[in-house]
Amino acid sequence: MGRIFEKRKHSIFKTAAQNSKLYSKYSKQLYMAAKNGVPDPDANPVLRNFVERAKRENVPSHVIEKAIQKAAGTGGEDFQPARYEGFGPGGALVIVECLTDNNTRTISDIRSCFTKTGSKMAANGSVVMSFDHLAILSFKGDNEDQVLEAMFAADVAIEDVETKDGSITVFVPPTEFYKAKTSLIEAFPGLELEVQEITFLPQATKTLSEEDLALFERFLGMLNDCDDVQEIYHNVSLP
Image (tube, rainbow, N blue to C red):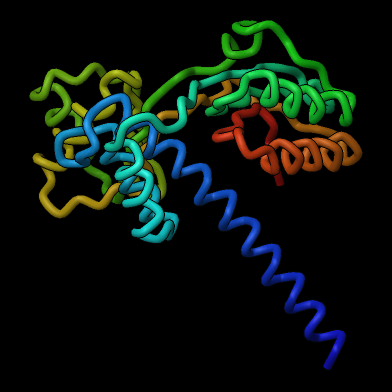
């Protein structure tokens, strides 16, 4: 019984640590969205998007509400966005986005992840140029023409529309995200978006050797363990 308990205990602690990281990530994003706009999701589309994303990932309501209430008060933390770029194991291209209240601490943590895996940080702009910065909206459907008509009627600038395996994916510039989302919901009542995010998509993917892949996965794990890391983008084709 003792051995089974030890396994369960490890699983419980691991899950708790993952949840803690997820809650911390969304608390910062919600706080910043509310602080930079208004602490009301109905009047702040950026905040509303983070609230919806947090709920989809099962972040408790009290965590969401606490972050928004905190932003509504005076003072508080002053988080700033920070982006780091570099070359991971096997020459992988990596973009790390953070929210930090201490740049010295954050860059030290990120640099340590690169150094310990034989990776190399790069100057800002040298890696991001190999990615497309896009907003993505994906949902069940197959009538691409109707989607295009809705986008054109709302004067949304479209980068691309893709239909595959019963799903339609719309790619638009980040600045068009909320306009595109609103026009789709209005044109297709009851529409459920399976993906709605602003992301960096690699212009070409890279396949790593077994050895480099193992090191790259360790590298990602180290970055994810950093409290200030919010998102990691890369060009590696993972199995």
